Length: 103
Image 1 (cartoon, rainbow, N blue to C red):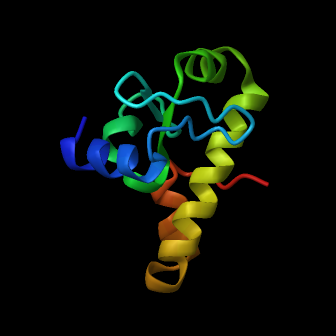
Image 2: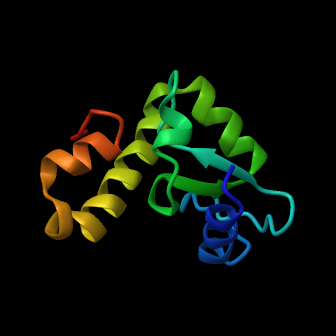
């Protein structure tokens, strides 16, 4: 895990779970969730836009509930598209998201 990414993500969260339906106070005890996963993809696509600081309950749920996990994949896609689509184009954004676009 890149320490600069971890720091930027935790600062963005302001100490709260980044699942808006939860928003539990988790400063110092939260989990860094990588929305892009799979063999060889996690490290390759690790970025501030694709990682989320979430509580242990929400993190566990992302690994058990496909729909819940998809919410974070969509959030990552929106984050990347906002930042990068004008810079690099849709196909490069698709690559940064591990080859898929959702929604």
